[in-house]
Amino acid sequence: MKTCAFITLGCKVNQYETQALRESLAMKGFLEITPEQAADLYVINTCTVTSTSDEKSRQCIKKVRKKNPRATVVVTGCYAEADAETINNMEGVDYVITKAQEAQLAEIVCRDTVHRVPAQKTITPLANSNATEDSIYHLKISQFAGHTRAFLKIEDGCDMYCSYCIIPYVRGGIKSRRPQEILEEARRLIGNGYKEIILTGIHLGAYGKDMQGKYRLPDVVHMLSNLSGLGRLRLSSVEINEITTDLIDLFVHTKKICPHLHIPLQSGDDVILRRMNRKYTSSQYIDILEGIRAKMHVPSFTTDVIVGFPGEEEAHFQNTMDLCEKAGFGRIHIFPYSAREGTPAAKMKDHCQPQTIRQRKARLEAAAKNLAFSYKKQLVNSYAEVLVEAERDPETNQLCGYSERYVKILFDGPDTMKNSIVSVRIGEVAPSFVSGSLG
Image (cartoon, rainbow, N blue to C red; front, side, top):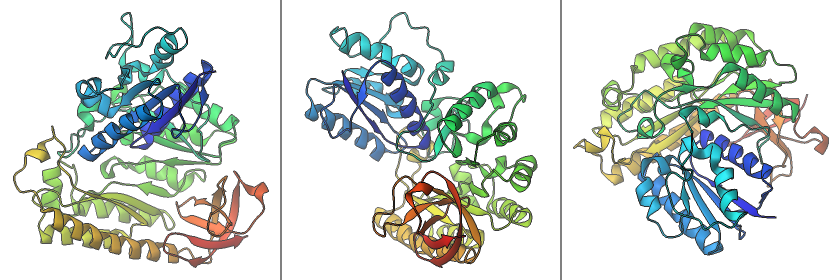
């Protein structure tokens, strides 16, 4: 039996796509082992969101080749789309496979590793390929290895063209998955025991734009929320100006939808937002959050922020700090700006000094920690629905899991509760989690 191993870099969409490749290779008889072992086949699903991501991808390629010099090494993902030539010229790479060709990966690899045809480094491995952009959905999943929750990709591509981001050039435009396919995959995941499904995409809120308005994100959310056996549904990330009234109404009136929204901010200053080519103002962002709070009970807001964007002065950064405080985020993912070759922002002349970026990142991290603590304190003595993880907390040996508001909760209980949703009364608040007791 041939063995395979996977290395996945980057976002949740990449994790989903790796799972699809994992299942397609398993159907061909491959046995998965860990990347630390010497496998016959390594699949490296790369990320290219920053130059650092590119370097990590190259390091992974070199590392796996050392593990087994005779292994077949396949590189796919966003870096493979962005700079196939560089990867193609790297020693030890057998195949660079584009997104449109991922559905054929198992066929390509089996042709070489099973039938022992000499591998040839190439960008188009099957000369008679009829792959189209639709083939990004030809691979399907029925489980999500190593996860209690399952991601379900319903959209690919982006049309925002933020000035710092390479992804629209790499992934292309909006490509929405057909509702019936989404429904079928959700049913498979539920049938295999997954209690929570997280809808994901590169530009999730744009779902349906390529369907002439026939379907939109609220339609998918409504459709899935009616599925029998589904415990809860969560959205991975939605842009502030794509949070519509009908979407919020679904959150308010549908118990299965988690009251948690991840809404990228990037900057709290209007000058910087315009330079980023973001399509909203700071006041619009706050107004929408306040409108949601008026309808929902203690909603959870998490976000992404870039610090040190070109042209960001102290006053601009302070506006970001102030907005984060006003927004009351439960969690902030902070990204120090780094120039991405090929983007408009990389060509801007007024880049911040590395030391300034580091200092601002540290200041925002401290503020984010206080905000997270404040948000969790609002939940003390209330009850949360916790999806219990398969592994206990390594430090306390308690059961742990995430609540519907995406708060990590630790509590005492038997192993029989794993992979079930249980009611927990929230007690003591710690910096990175809260303690609770069974209700």
